[in-house]
Length: 282
Image 1 (tube, one colour):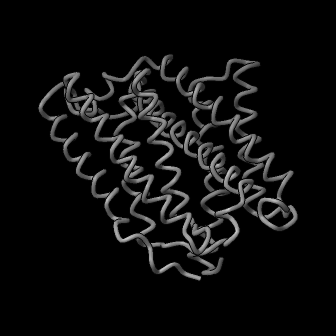
Image 2: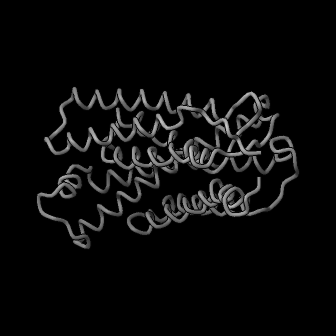
Image 3: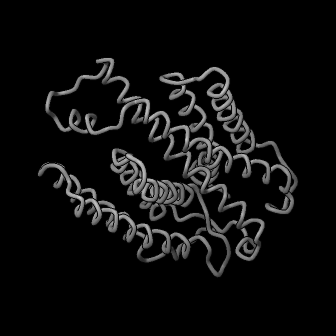
């Protein structure tokens, strides 16, 4: 069944993300951020994350049951990715990811207003096994989403270093790239994200395979979601193994990350999109 009573303030997180991006755009023209303004931006992101998180929880875990769809999935993934960015940005030089993480969150937070999702299971709200699997899967995909954004940023940085990207001298893009950490540091940060994300993805895939009957009320079926999830896990595992054995790095590593992440999105978002939008069924 379609959920028509979607939260009346579902638009609020997107509006707040948009306002924050406009403020940051204005501040970027005025020069370098002070420590105080950076701290205020961090506080603003935290407040919006709380509002977004409460709105997501209330719209997914309802008294009627577990309401979900590809739009809710993307919104959760964006929330987790931004939350990881916010936490890591206090300790690591990843401020360059802020624009991408906020823009991704803005778009994904608004999607549930257009695609309100469906009632998946009335029992899921009270089932601790399902909730645990759901939370770990969402955190894994959210963290790997941040890693994919980081990889895209590295790709732009690498092309600029090799003069394969037309950049206006003293332009905003040029200054933005100059503020990035060295490519070696960026690569080290990327693999730190991948190690944690892969560990959580492994837990997600193994729990789904071993406890399918308990979690989903049906035996394991090798459908498109399961196949793409396994393909993504194999690609991430191969990437980390190649990194350990032969020191894989650079453009090859970036392409590998983006390919594995594409398979992951097809598994956890693409399957729901096909069912809801194209086939129009649960």
